[in-house]
Image 1 (cartoon, rainbow, N blue to C red):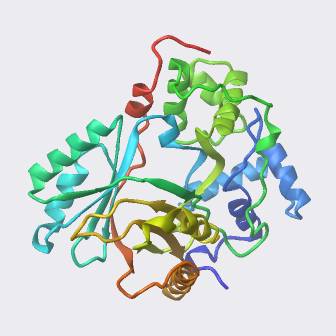
Image 2 (tube, rainbow, N blue to C red):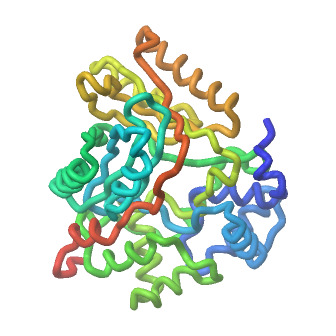
Length: 360
């Protein structure tokens, strides 16, 4: 299978970098040398200096959303929820502007559904803030919102791999950092909060990114490295590496498949669907009687309509192994327009989960 035209300019080394380092980049003071050495062991000859420059160029050319630490916002603190609503065609842009004006709205997409055509994520410090934000949106727009909080998570692993070297994306160098033990705490210290806020925008593309972060937060580089490694062990950080711009890599078909799974089967079906390598997000969410009959979401991405349709069919076939899927038991909502995409705000969520007195 060939990649989309958007990636034809990527050479073998670029493709190897994008595949290899979507997770597991070393957390050491000078990470590019060991990362380059690991690529060389896979037959891709590159120096640490060359690797740094290539990642800089991939970033500048729009192939990356960023480079750095992928934080698990839920583990840091606060809450996020998916919300659906109907925006009448004649008022769609007006309502989108009203919704997007809320800083708590991180992502907003137009999706091709006959009724629920606007889907956005609200990220806040606590559940009461969700109710407040949705109440304000309903009052401003005159439209009802449908809250779809996550009830079970089966997979969140948005890797976008290309044809080429390290195509399985299995190069994990996270063990190169210091050995640390989880703290057993769910809350943050003030220093950890400051580190999270500094890291959320990505790592500096320099030879010593962690030292630069340490300088920015007024800490020792050894503490920054140990804390990032501990966050990995605790699940506060999902991974460290390149975060591709999947649209630039040709993954333009974003299909949110939704399913009416019998309640007693959700916990069995979830892991089976999550096991499909092309499923990037997989959750149980609530139904809304009379409006939204689906309780299971599985996100797929494809580089063409044909590839996307094949992947959706594979999800349906896997579902059929557990129950008879009727034509009214599922749907696919493709995104037709990105209305807002600013990323999850960590500052208020981290602050709400911070102890006033350091307890390290």
